Image 1 (spheres, rainbow, N blue to C red):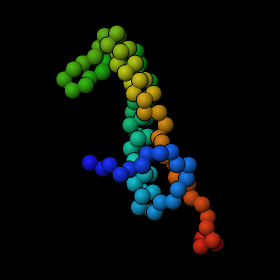
Image 2: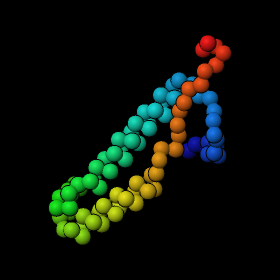
Image 3: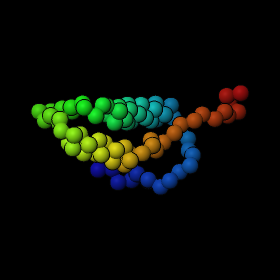
Image 4: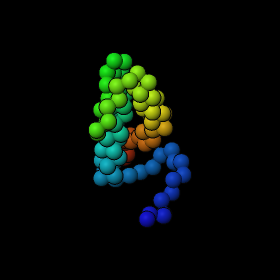
Length: 92
């Protein structure tokens, strides 16, 4: 188990290109998943949902499922990291 990670809030920092690429890939994954959840919320009311072997086809089941999706999106929120580049004297 990793026990030396500092999760304190940092407003800026420097990372190498490999770390930046990993963060960008994780952000793409995160955005794809939240897009999928938002797509579920846009489905028509008369649609059915199949999760594995289970079919949700009653209006109350679909409503409860969508409430779960809304709760998930609320917990996930916005991706917590952002990357921006800054110019340095070496770049100029």
